[in-house]
Length: 340
Image 1 (tube, rainbow, N blue to C red):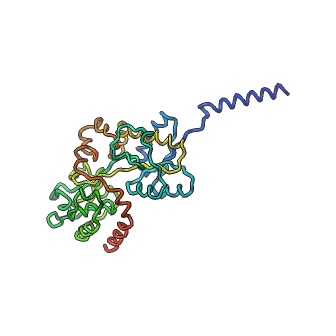
Image 2: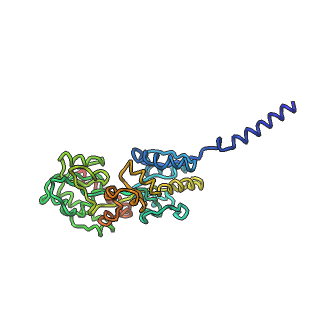
Image 3: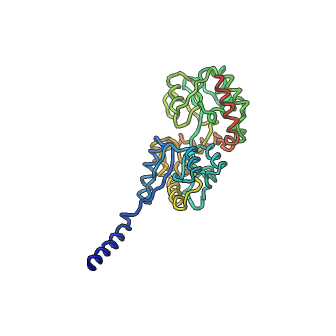
């Protein structure tokens, strides 16, 4: 019996030793949120798969992400998802509500990034622009004053049914300058413009719509997201006076040290120019690396909102203003749309 017990004891010790080895180690898992779709596919292929091979950390994507989910887990006190993608306005809102933690950039130690992409509370994951586009057979406007002049430049305008993407340009249509936009949108001027041309507006909600409306000649002019209208036959798109914006990854307040270590490694991988080039195979929105332009063709570089040439003629969306004036914008936008 003693011999049997001794053998069983030895077997248990040996089994425990084997089970503690790498083959039986508990998987390291990083939970993040994002909008899913093609973007989620790109992150899975270009970031998550090589990250697992290099670090042994499995990334689980919860889609869609967004402010509401970050807010809900903060209220519950159970922080599962360490990060979410977020537009600029949601980043500022999250800071104000105390549900985000600042990024320790020294600890994250990224590869070279554009400075504006290294926000205190946000990791600038990709850039996009909202720009002017028009049919090649339409009279070409030189700026947004002319774009909104329906007498000298007749035709329908396909406009985004989102206040943050149309009101700045409408204000410019009444003469507000790109330089003044850094202080915020003159709402009086914006709604004055939209009231003046409301009979010539076609509102769009899906990013693919403006290009199709232009191709079908249902609209002659459009305001659209850059990646949706560049390179289409019969359409001219220009970054001149375009609005440059950044899509962010924000960090949930209350994550553990282990979660933060994994998240920072995952974010750092995304600062690599080759990884960002891989992401371009899915969506035409470049990442924050200034090195990216060195490894793409000149033709591709021309399409980047971040190229030196295109950056020089754009202005950066005033995210803080949008957060501070969100209630007023919503009120006036709803009043305007109700009368349409």
